[in-house]
Image (cartoon, rainbow, N blue to C red; front, side, top):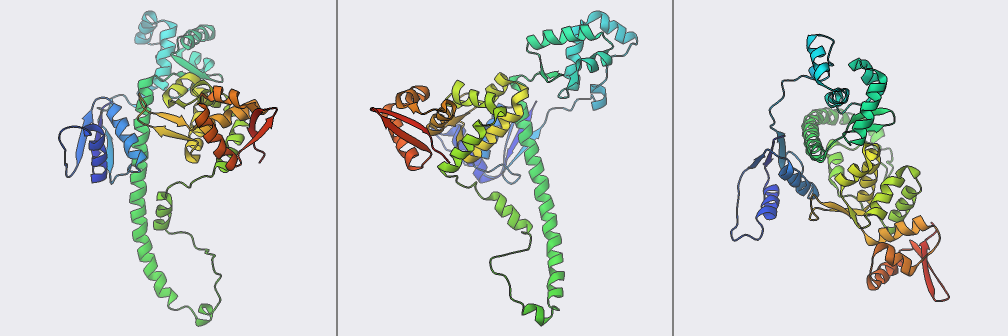
Length: 374
């Protein structure tokens, strides 16, 4: 996959130069556009993350283009199944059942298929297909969701998916921006007509008292755009604590939460958690990351190698242990679980007590903490 990245605005260009030329013995001042073209996607992913963090991912600042030569294979051709013609019989003689099953899953990817569907399409016995799928699953080439099988993505494909997703978001944003511009023009015409009509409104209607503080009108396109561009609201520690309790009480997220808070503890990579838990947890992983990042429970650190990682604030690592343990935990046990020094731990817990998200008990010189009742 070849990618072309076009940096348009001075803000985007300055961010790029500051990251890749910082600390050198020279300074660069680039006017106009900067175009980056590469056969791999690593720089494109890096630039996408850099601009996303500064809210500069829009057509005004950057454009991502997929310049990979298009394949001559059409969608219908990609889904063709070998028939029992001369070529099909020759292929059956040279390929094993396992290879044919894997080739079929690669062709229909990312769609999924049951053992019965694969057997019918390839015209191979059910038991032979089932055995082939078991071997492919053990080799890590395919994965399954309930009773359906699909080709498993490798790390390179995951990166491509990130870039493609980013490009799609930008394309959709560009389309929305063009639509809003057209809408604004239509609204201007309609507004002129409305102004003329309002001039003919009777004085009796003008004299009617208006309700203060209440607007029954829908926000205009420009107002909606302004609302969407506003930064996310700051959530209080109590709101974050409630979110933690609600999420941990849902058994559906147990595997994802265990990996984030107890297997990796301080930080985690999206690619690795997806590889570890598999496609079956992909939706839950995305849900939890989006929720926790929005609330400020986790934060993305692009400086951590290799592709950046999400970091969990120490207070929420402590809170996760308190929720998991149910019963009040001794101070020493908590510090050991989250690997914190005494000074840092005391500072964090003092603030948590002030925020009223934890409770402290001292019995026979033993200090214990628990989740505060809400």
